[in-house]
Amino acid sequence: MNKLQRARRRTIAWITLPILLLAVSVYGLAYGSVSIPLREINQVLLHNDDSTYRTILMDLRLPRVLVGLLVGACLAAAGALLQGVMKNPLADPGIIGVSAGGGLAAVITMVMLPQLSYLLPVTAFLGAFLTAVAIYLLAWDRGASPIKIVLAGVAINALLGAVMNGVMVMYSDRVQAVLPWLSGGLNGRSWHHLEFMAPYAIIGLIASLFAIKPANLLLLGDDSAQLLGQRVELQRLLIILLSALLAGTAVSVAGPIGFVGLVVPHVIRLLIGEDYRFLLPLSILGGGTLVVLADTVARSWFDPIELPVGILLAVIGAPFFLILLKKRGNFG
Image (cartoon, rainbow, N blue to C red):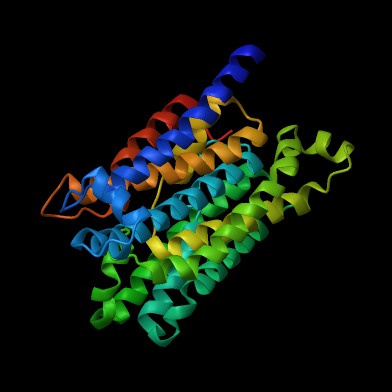
């Protein structure tokens, strides 16, 4: 792909993705068990309308769409950063164990310490944060190579999954409340969930924009980045921790939704290249679009059953991962 083609694709992506995000958001507001005409949506959002539609839109669908946007944006940003810092398109918060750390912390909070449920975003972040640190330390040997981080993450992921299952067996009488969350979904998400996740998500997304320059420099290779005066290991650690914040925030509200951080950044990278000045913001837009679209499909196409969005995304993402793995042939 030459520079002219890449520039043209970037322009098209900058125009297309915001329009697609807006269209998907409107689709999410309009469709569900009750379909709402566009004129009614306009009436409710722009005017003081006390109809039944207002209750459905303002109390149920609008906060759910906004939560979905933030969840998708956080997961895609985390995936894009991890793929760059590890130089591996297979890196993803779910695959290397960061999401599992946040998920385990969230399960422990909900099952063993339900009185602290209001701290769920904090505990999920701390779980993801400690997992990221553990992975980094396990991979450290006069430096932490990307392949060692991935392999350590896979092992930690399996371990945390076993611990989570053990906690659920020990507290089987309380598991019923956690099962819907474990499937990964946005059912029942309200303004309350948006309020307690939004500060963490916004801080993480803004901070991720400041990681664009170091992420681009790390793409040059460790030796080249060091020659340019970069503290490679410190920057890699900070970017991994930032990814933990983003993943933990998403997990705390939506549960362990997988493959968003894998699929979206990789597709964007194939279209517009590696430059994080374009890759990261477009991945954020693409992640929000994918989660809202998948959630709307999951709750409207299978009526009267509402399919958890995590299941639908796994059905989409797992074949994509296998195709990618087949093409790559290794983790390099």
